[in-house]
Length: 223
Image 1 (spheres, rainbow, N blue to C red):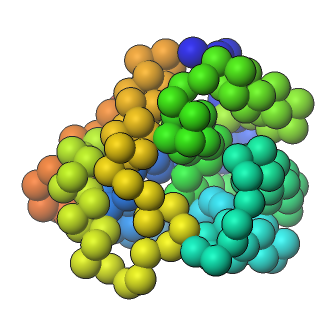
Image 2: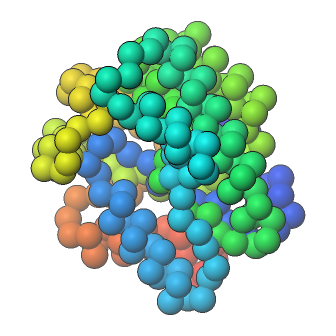
């Protein structure tokens, strides 16, 4: 597994925390983020909620292109569009928030690129993983302090996702694609245990929310 940059607190002198949520489709990220933001508000912690691809006006335009089922682009173009969106998102939203001490709660970040483009698209091809590593080192100043990987069996997640609105360009992929994505998240969690925490995503939203909050408390000594 390629090396990645340091987490934000190791490179930014501020009290803001950067937390990302990851997982395959239908794992319940939106609800888990809702619960965490509610708990942060109750605790009096200033925070913002954002997402990738997207999060800034320009990045949201690229998100529309990337998720549109009618978009027909090759893998390299997809990868570069994702990083273009991420660069703008970091400069316009993430860095200013962290600089003023605000916590950033992000739905997906660079780990999704590793899992979806590095594993889902290309079966963990070393050359592709190397491309993603190089782009990350060159353009991404730091990674989240904590990444919460919501882990759910692929078929269960796909069944959940199928009950939502019309599938976007990524959600339309076959089961085998998401199996490879899951393998990617598994490999990332094994390579970066100090940052990526696996959260069992089965059970009620309340139980998942409690697991998420416990991980946050443990990571930042809040208990």
